[in-house]
Length: 160
Image (tube, rainbow, N blue to C red; front, side):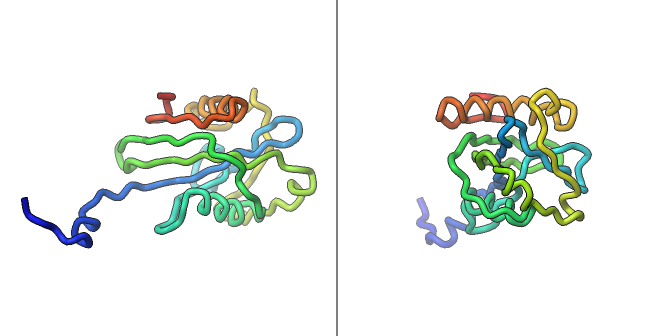
């Protein structure tokens, strides 16, 4: 067996793409959804985890960029490993609980109108109409994880 210097070993390790998102509700129990200019469906706040950034740091940054809110995420709800499909690389997704936004916090929301073009608080019954089917299913799982106090693990968006 040939000895490999640590730096070379590190360079040869696989790199996975990671994303981080957060769930917010209002006092009525409606989900916060965002409409991005480059997607034809609504989604939750969040985005790509940058190099040398933790998933928690990434979601806090993304929430500030997308919504102009300074928040502390409260707990991890789910981690999902997703296999590569078509032109999408394998990735890890971290989903956090952002909390229940007060009326004051809701009034502070400002979107840029370029990347994020709209937002709304949606009753559970309307989530299916606005999001991808898998997100609607996952939102229900995340809500159960929050109620149980235990994070869930998914592979390809399915509970494992």
